[in-house]
Every structure is written in structure tokens, then in C-alpha cells.
Length: 159
Image (cartoon, rainbow, N blue to C red):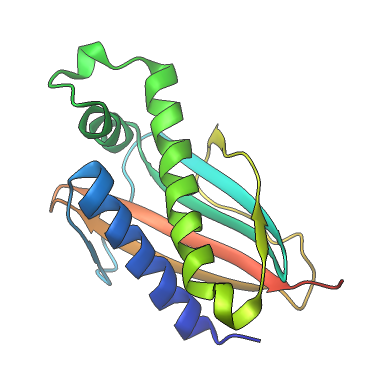
């Protein structure tokens, strides 16, 4: 199986690519123990299957999600962003990140099929893939203003 450290690096690199090119925001990994997602959290989640199966999630505060949505849509005011726009944006961010992860892993693990993203109010994903599943997480600092958490739960496919 691919090492957790390698997956974490791939997830972080993929997220950086997406944020820089599609959202026009900088992100950096943070290890600060006191950094946390404040207030109500939104979780964008997308599942995948094939040579590997699992899910990838991005979790951030509502104001962070609104800012991401504003940047993606080219809007200057939070009042112009609906809740549906915000949910769509976070789902699309998860989709774009897992798409980049898929591209990075294609030669190593083989084909991976991606589902439609889901967005929920929540903070974390739980392991329901069994004992052989691996979970990698990384906290990121977005524009030195927000904290978000990237998670990828995966295992080698049983097929």
C-alpha cells in the first residue's frame, strides 16, 4: 500500500494546486496545536473507488467557505453568495482536489472512479472501511486568516 506520508503530500500538493489556480488563495500546512476551525463547519466530501477506495474531505468554517465561494465566483460581497453557492463551491473544491489526487496516483495505483461530491454540516469523516483503512489529515492555513482540515480515508480495493 502507498505510505501515509506519500498520500498526505499528494493531498497537500493537490490542494495547493487547486487553491492557487482555481480559487486564487494561498494555503500552507499548519502544525499549530491551537489552530482550529471556529464556529459552524461545512464538510465537502467526495468518494472514490477502483484500485483504491475511500473518500476525501475538506472541512472549514462557514465564513471560510463563503470566502472560497466568493473567490471562485468572482464576487466581492458575502451578501451576494447564497448558501447553495457556498455548498456548491465546497463540493467543487473537494471534487477538484480528488481529481488532482487521482492524476498523481494514476500510474502508481491504477484507475480510480470519482463520485458526485456531497456537502454537509459537520467536522470530520469516520472510518467505516474496516481495519485495513488508512486516514491522513492535514490542517491548512488559508490566506493567514482561516484554518481548514483536509482528510483522506482510503484502502486498497478488495476487488
